[in-house]
Image (cartoon, rainbow, N blue to C red; front, side, top):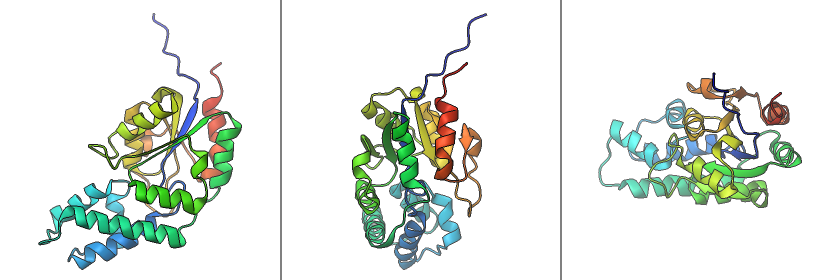
Length: 229
């Protein structure tokens, strides 16, 4: 019998942004409601949950496919949403609970720190500046210039490459189904931090561990970082 493959000890943690580090999902919903309702899309906050975690161009395509609007190009609609989200983040976004303690926990364990988000860099830069944590990340990747956003794994693969670690030696921290699928497809281990006020992600079963909030991340890391016996 051949020996079971050895899982590498993790060397890096790669965070998602929206809904994991910063409480920006309500701000995305606010911006989407403003922009899409002005185009005649009968959007509600509950319906906004259908596109959580998707890249903004996919969100625009989703709602155009259901409720086509005349004249306004998709690129302009996407830019309007992104610009509004960035402005809202700069004005009043709040960190998710225990963000700084979670980042400290990663550093204390000697793990490299990265970020992989479907959000455009305008939003990422606004969020990291708002939280004052930009310098803590050794790699920051946006899916904006890529052929596809999450659930495609490329943004995670690129973040791992930037950190100089194999995906199997990295842990992703995610909240949405598209993000969980992306990290799992990349070959990473995944810690899920689902929004307690929303329906659990349908891809939650892909997570190696599920935690209630980032205050539990240190314990979760210890479970995954501990060398096999």
